[in-house]
Length: 133
Picture 1 (cartoon, one colour):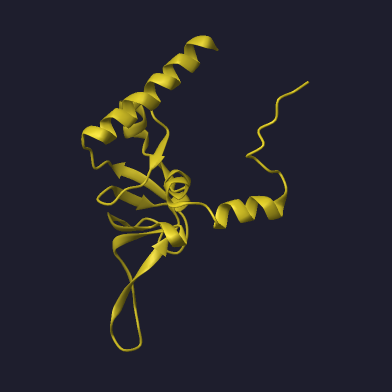
Picture 2 (cartoon, helix red, strand yellow):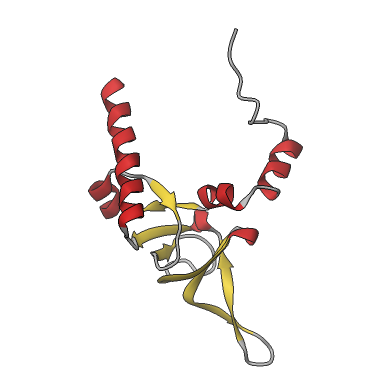
């Protein structure tokens, strides 16, 4: 008999409910973006959760090609705000545009001790998987 993960649902309604009622810790993981080719080769990691002060390039949508530093990670709305990607309101005030993490590629990581440990842990797992395959 096969073992099924009870936490995963293939039902559309259950998947949507899980997505929209997810806690912040789960949203962090869901808000991952892939690394650029150079970073991918350097760290042997394909994607990592986005963080404030990471530098990204937008690769999809009307803002395609724009680059900048992440100013806010808005977990409640599943969007990130990127420096200089703004919209003018009718009163002249500028507001940041929400960009989906799936439309971003990380070009420069904001590293600290914890982030380096995360990268090392992911790379170690990828190496172990490559050996067993």
